[in-house]
Length: 438
Image (cartoon, rainbow, N blue to C red):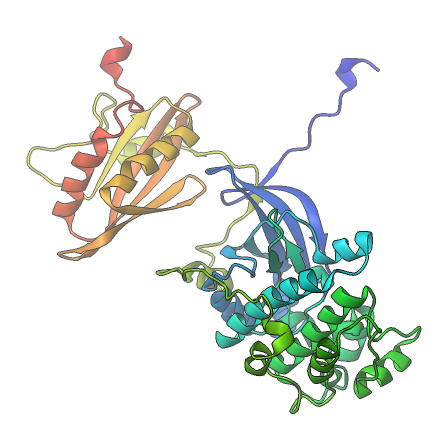
């Protein structure tokens, strides 16, 4: 075959600042794609939900609430949510990428775990579940697919707080089609249930599987399986220690009212052996505005899936942006007048301009939020009129020429003037100076 018949490479899709890659997971109501942040080059996972599916099941408010709660959670054993975006048809949840595979791959390849190893994973699982419950967030669907390991072997629960609305379909059908072996009897019987109690049951079943290498409830047909789960009819193999057997009987208890609760579990002798409480610091100042924006009806914050490049600007738009547009100067200055917006031009690539702006702004005490070729600089100190905030955007004027607009969106105009005088000194090597080109 001649080289002329080569199939061109498939174009990459961009959503906001993320370039989407291959699908790495798929369920009945969502898919997960590998993605790359084009600004930082970090890899993430993006969970893509069908917006209409969420609406059909009346779960928009519940999902918004749970994602907001999860975004505030920064626990070492829970997959982190970084941000949320939405298009007209989809909701994108940007997640920490966990590279070590599923915990249960270890059992599938190597058989049951040794007691100390199983206990260590179970302790991490309970740490995460306890922390999320204390924040009012419940998983309700803990199962092997949701237990991941990072590259250091640390357990991470995925989909915490995101599995709620998948249960709005017919409960029995959903369970029968999914993984009923880990589900508490009160969930299967559809009597109404408490999320914390059903999560603990699932943790008990997971511990059993780690230690045994097989399920406590496993029947060829669903009705027989449901009968056994409803009665908590299971037996432990002879290699389980008496302490472990006693613990499992208290966790895998068919009655949610008498089932062991986490405070009791934390005091259990078998559980406490070698226990290390989690050590981490909680993030402060986490912003959930992106979650609200993704779930409201405003079209202002919607993203689109497309191949991105900077917005092109025609001559008319260019002139209308600036009455005294001068390519020779860094910033527009009019004698003694402090302006609320200003421009400069550059012959450098757009990504390099974005990086340089961020590099210049951070030492001046500004937090940087980027989306596509727009950037918001937020001052961390309150001035005379609150925090100074500056919006920037990169426009393509010609294939090798960009114009950068800076606009004060909050705070004091005099402070903005002082800011850009300092800020401009950090941009000298990317600014186009016409005099130098002659």
